[in-house]
Length: 238
Image (tube, rainbow, N blue to C red; front, side, top):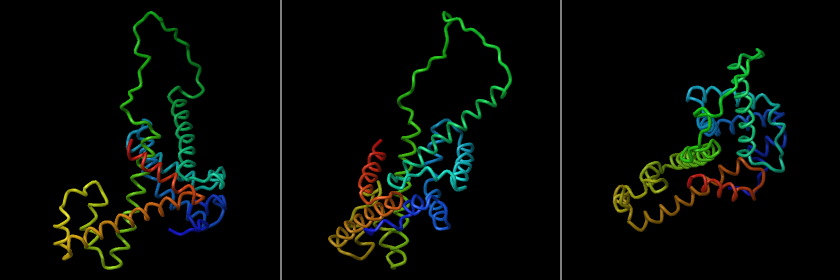
């Protein structure tokens, strides 16, 4: 991961406020990376799968149109935080429009008095077991960051002729790390057990670096990477 952050996607967008070609391209890349978290939020917010995906396209189309990004503060830049706030406003506006349509727009409605003594299911207790939209967004964001970092690592290793090593040792980067004994991996790669242990250690370090590099593209200051990494780990524990 480089020490200079002036070329990261989010700082480019926030600095230029999305007004030039480079910023537009950077914003498009960020939107692509955050598509799954946005869908997850909208699904948990009560939309069906197809509706959530359609609304996600509408949301990003509005964001890419240009004006929406002007609210970004380059001095307080976490793309995740900015996007979630914008998404909440978008979802609330969409819900208001849906309710207006259901009410019949500008039509006059009669007010029906309800008998307070009658048994009613109007009050409902929130189910704590149901994942909140914010939590769904953060968890999917964390999974997306890990997936993108893993994809970057895979491409690099295949390009360097280490595709077999990646395929063999990949389980130790995921939840499947105990699925295969290390001595079997060593035999498959034609390496000693100790050499495989060292290779796994190095692979895990490269994976952590790849995750940090992915996060770095979405913050405006290097100091925020550690905080976002902590947020990622917290999201995975929820």
